[in-house]
Image (tube, rainbow, N blue to C red):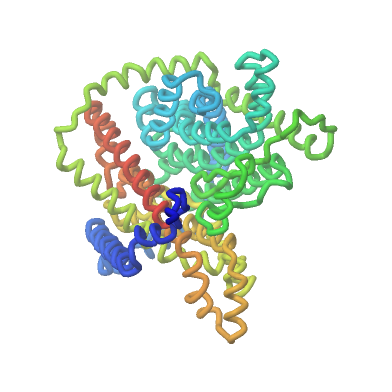
Length: 580
């Protein structure tokens, strides 16, 4: 009697089916999760005083503020122009410092170029640390240590940008074509020669693109850094607010708005010129199509998400270097490169900021930082924990409310889901306009209107989410294939609202939830500094400790912020993986 072979393959499908939770269990788990999130959202609204009677009861105050803001007064326009120029020099110098520091950090933080496990661990720690500290916190420290002026703003922007730039520089190095690197090493090239000849050509375009994007972020940050004495147009905003001349406040706000939008558009044009026409125009990390592509796309053609933007990566060159002639694209990149270098050098000259001045500033900040040790967690522990809970409540309330408001904006803005092309363009314009207003500047005005407290912070972040989250949702829906379901629904005479409810939202639902979680992650960082302008949260205690020179409590608060930001970031990433 023939025995059955012990090597007979076993079908794994029944085993996977047995291990997979039943549909009813999944449904119950989703319902429980939704109920928990709803309860937390309601608690966050209550903790931040964001109740209907509080919001509607302050509409008269907001209307009174708007009446006091108009018409804008540009009497001191020459002074404002000088402040804008100073802001641009600050942003240029700060971004350049960040790139210079981030390059060696990225080399050590990339697994395929690091010099060893110790260097790798140290570089990754520095990157994580600088990503978690808000730039406004660094600006407060530098202003207190070295005094008021643009130097404090430049250094704050430079060090706060190192984390983001270093992380994505390192990620890009890890995705290069190793064949070219191995060929360079086979010729006996040193580490430096290999980096210059084999690594740098593959990552240069993407690095420049990321640097331009960070320039956009730093411009928004510079406006707020000046509010705490770090120079630039933000310093003028703080001055006129102190004088309570609200018509001049509106004038400066309009200047900042135009400046942010103009620089963003110029930066986008420069990125397109640098990356060339072969690079994708846009990619959203929360789209369905992006998730499908990421499972089978080769490493050299991947993309990296940075906040609301993904920096497109050009395919790595294979088969050795290519001898290209002086075509229009190369000439454009050559001109842009030398122009950028000239602007960087000019920024340091105009700010009178050289290696000597930077060295003196760093020497002065050293004793100030040493004076923070050891951190004092016990003094005012209960009030600090209460303010941290208020910060998380602000972020959760604003992210949820913002997602609710941004969802229709994003759906209408998506070309493949809108009810009319004109409506799509208007919705895109709305997201662009709202993104041009820094959240903290909105919080400053709302504090004047509704008073001190977290209500102003929640309102400011919620308004900002219309532009930020709305763009994410619109991009995600446009990257989602809705053609089959749309054609089927059109065939049975379904209207736009029916298509939206039965097709668009269910298909893009994971991407929509992912955008909401990403917004919460970003808003936790933003909410930590709202208290600096009186809009509630842990920033209130941080500002008070710095101004009162309670350095041991300052360090304790910074550590609390670091741990909170890191924990919420990990939680957000985990939840996105579960959803996406």
